[in-house]
Amino acid sequence: MTLALSGSEIASQIEEQFPRSVVESTADSLLVKAESLLEVAGYLKTTPGLDFDYLTAITAVDYFDFFEVIYQLTSLEHNHSLVIKARCYSRDNPVLPSVVGLWRGADFQEREIYDLFGISFKGHPNLKRIVLWEGFEGHPLRKDFL
Amino acid sequence: MEVEEVYSSSELDKKEGKAINELIARSQETIPDPDEWLDEEIKRNILLTSVDAILDWARRSSMWPVFCFPACCAFEFITTAASRFDISRFGMEIVRASPRQADLMITAGTLTWKMAPQVKRIYDQMAEPKWVIAMGACAISGGIFRSSYSVVPGYNRIIPVDVYVPGCPPRPEALLHGIRMLHKKIAKESLFGEGK
Image 1 (cartoon, rainbow over the protein chains, first blue to last red):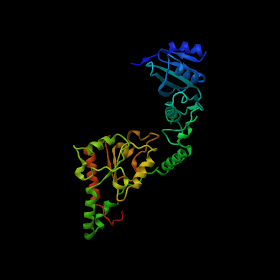
Image 2: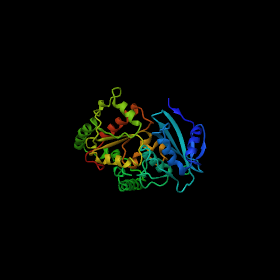
Image 3: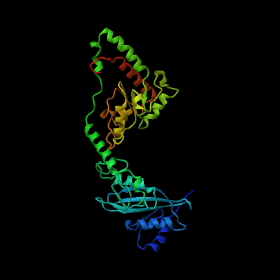
């Protein structure tokens, strides 16, 4: 079975590499600053021993005060997994860096989050609606939709 | 990024979005169900009735459905078509992938606005005479998704419906009953009636 790595254990390694990039770490997940997301993700993908070569899923949650985007990473080589999260606090123009450059599988999922939550992914090569049609008003999975 | 050219142009998306929004704007009222045949019997004369009888018999005896199964009601249709319920008894076991060769649309499932232009196009491509059975709660009114932002609240927003079969999903017996009702309706149609 895939071994779920503890966020707190990885946190010290990440902190050492990128100081003040980790906001919070628990046994389940690792919350990183939005500015550091891309470099942390790149580090998790390329560092020997971690090798998170596969992005299982991206999803997002609207907590009213902020949007939280959750990345579930897996290493096919070591058969272990990790959950990292990032938050954006703006409701008018929430932006996060895109991870399509690291994992091509993020392409459609980031578009879906853009479509339904209105979060922009900076650096995405083709950021446009995927489920709803062009011209639809609003982002239906936001808590204040309707 | 070097992969950019594999993506479709956003112009195409805008065109699609515009078409959908225009369809929504056009589809705020329901299209009246075809019911001119109801009081038609009085107007018929004897000769035409005989011709009509043969034509209607031919039409209803081999209705070929077109593929239009966007959601879960499809499985009840498949069961209806399979050996136990067996719609080949009515000469309609051949479900056509081409709307040109079909004269019945069984709308088995929830329809979203994004899919609506395609369903309307399939209906428009079917040759006359053609009929529509709205199968299940979603097809009748949008069902439990009626108030959703993405669901068409009833197929009669975009195409005229002849028979409504309620259920979520309807059992094969209910669909068969609906088909029989459509047969009865076709039996009363006149080639030279006002409605045709």
